[in-house]
Length: 532
Image: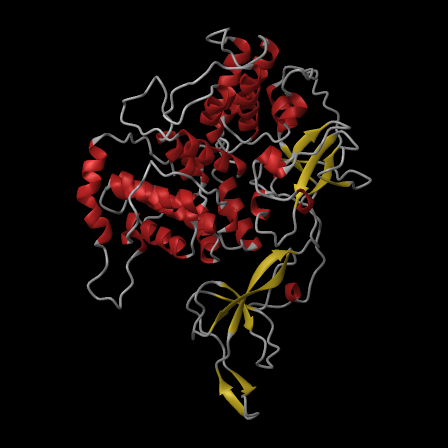
């Protein structure tokens, strides 16, 4: 669902905020035994004048994603490929797959399902059901759900439109680590000579921290505004305090280039202009006019305009920044795009397990294994769809079984504390499906966004502090239970590196608070950079 957040903050906003501040704090139900709906919760008013901003990462806040649910989610996303006309898409199956994933508490699927409801893709569900889904995600502590609720209040989607509440929810989402909310709010704190007095508030130090925090999480669109912050020194008021220097221009150029790799269409468009036909030769970011580079950025710009989901992590293979030379190119659009795409080895073929040979409700596809989560339930029925097994301590060896939300848990004959046998309920523990690939380095993405390549031999792995031993595509990886694995073990973190080059370091190059020794780089592809 598109998010329409182009809302300026007029001077009258504070007057309105003062009047409505009582309504924000007066949402508690008269009956204190009832829960205040998340949509009605009391939140502090948006404050553009905060002294500081602490960067949190969304990936460390969200619940772990069930592997089987992730596959359903990716399958549904692939069915909405831009190459498929909207009228030709099977939205019934898209909704069904997304709902299956959402029932396993796949947080992205929950928010996508809400979007499908708002778009009218399921005749039985509409805006109220979408709001309820977002509220369910809010109860799970998902930052993006607060961002979405802000958008609902801004647009009047399923709730009464209220821009004051919208900004309060966006502020909460940004504080929790949501990059989209950071990007939006940082733009409102970013002023300069062109828009001073236009109803915006200046807080450049906080704006930059928000932008850098969003960028550290791989959110490409924020790179466009961040490049302006880097290009010209600014006072806290937003006024430019000095000329662009070779150092500031190089930094701005670098963040735009990385933004293209992260899927920023505006960044690609700007670099096409900067290298091909800059508006001002005196202040241009590029070190010189380079029509060949401009042409390649143009190809990427048009592709991102058509497919916003595209990412080009191996951009340096086909389009490195100066002073590196451009590799040969035959001029074919697809050749350029495919070379810049992420890669993955062929997925391992799992061997059958005992669970994969069983019948429902004990059946589990051979692609997956089960991992106990430590989440327990003493309720008579399953609180949500998942694999559940009796928790330890009951002496029950029942294997994990798939239970739908609301399905009754079984009773067993167990020994109580006194050693007497009793028949009754036991505590159940949720099991998460994980990939049955023995920890293989296999980044996943929607079909069409990755190019499959043969696994290189020998298999090479390096630490961050080493020099790259072989030119090729390298994939960073952290342990599967690492709190930041969801923004490190991704294909869009790949990098094309030449022999002898240093490996990217999380704090220095990604702006991510992650020690070097927790990241290992793996060689994924050694194909030559010649794309002609």
